[in-house]
Amino acid sequence: MAITQSDINSLLSMITVKLSESNFVKWSFQFQSVLEGNDLFSYFDGSYPCPPRYVLTEEGSVTSEVTQAYKQWKKIDKALLGLLMATLDDEIMEIIVGSKSSHEAWIALQERFSTVSRANIIQLKTDLQTIKKGTDSIDKYLLRIKHARDQLRSVGVHIVDEDIVVVTLNGLPEEYSMIKTVIRARDSSISLKEFRAQLLAAERDIEAQFIPNNSMTVHGS
Picture: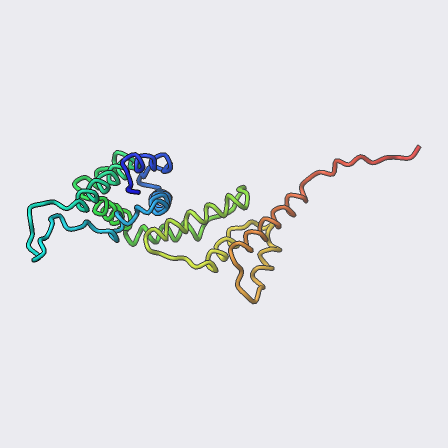
């Protein structure tokens, strides 16, 4: 069944994040996931290019008749471009003004948000390396580290899991010294899933130390 304007419009309710200057990673992940889930992202990434505009004769000559495939593709592409625009903040809209297709608009956004100065990359790396847990829960602390890692990934800097473990351990306070020693003494690498589980277990143990003993002592008569 062919995709309709109504089908495309219904996708907008699934895209809850509007693109601003500070959330490209989150927005692009959600936008791309929704479009891929509906077999429409190929319009944006260019893997489904526009079909030939005019009908050819059997001899291969170009006629003035426009192909149905071209008409249908252009109709869907314009609807997708409209969908994209509906997910952008006003100031971001200026980046894609003049784009003739959803693919052109997507490339313009990619170029805008992937272009970053060396100084900004250094700052992002510094932000990641200096994150401290502070009073945050382990889960909130790990989310902050993930966000910093995602920001670096969006500008082409990939941080391996082992380095994330090192950064996380370095930012833990003194009461986590035992788990820090255990992890650093391992002979093999640890997955981030297992690492999180061990940190959560350590967090529970630490919290238990500060829970007052409310049990009542019964004295004999």
